[in-house]
Image (cartoon, rainbow, N blue to C red):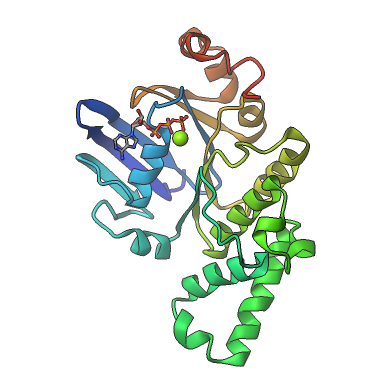
Length: 256
Ligand SMILES: Nc1ncnc2c1ncn2[C@@H]1O[C@H](COP(=O)(O)OP(=O)(O)OP(=O)(O)O)[C@@H](O)[C@H]1O
Ligand SMILES: [Mg+2]
């Protein structure tokens, strides 16, 4: 079996008395399609924040491509192949779709300031940006301002920005949250079309989406892993059903 692209071992974090990561361990190998589920407040977003370096763990280790990145800055982790999308919209809404994506590409090329002084390099970035937008079927919206797009397409721009960083590990925090079901299929298709070798971790409440996307599912409850397994196995686990039924019956039809 290939080595994990991302591995977390015994990760711990508390906010005051609230334990949000309790010895969490997880590994994503190349090609992983892994869903992270759990009730509201379980610590799912916090786990992503720990992995990306927005939040500092109180214990445990994070490995990226075999390197211990636990104390690395967020930017350094991005350069080593880690990208994420956010649960909250974080786009430059007054700029065009293409401009948003080109900023991410320039960032990755790490010579943003110098690069933009050179017309040929600029043309290169724009060409890559257009190619990327085509791959997520946003090329028709390239020149539109982000704020003019329907919400579902704005979330697609977030995905395109993350992809502009050319990640090997992609963390998606509820990519379809707030997107009307008529639009969410476009997002899911884009996720399904991601390069096969990429390792993808997706936080998702809607079990229909989880079953469609994931090969593995981890269930987080109060910061601790309740179980991990194949989707059918996890979905049929009485303990998992109990957790969800106790919450809001999301296992039965997902969030509306
Ligand atoms: N910076 C912070 N300081 C203090 N408490 C926090 C902080 N960030 C998150 N929390 C708390 O930690 C708990 C876990 O939050 P987190 O956002 O990780 O949950 P989640 O599983 O992503 O939930 P949801 O499904 O609602 O997105 C929550 O009770 C939250 O209020
Ligand atoms: Mg969350």
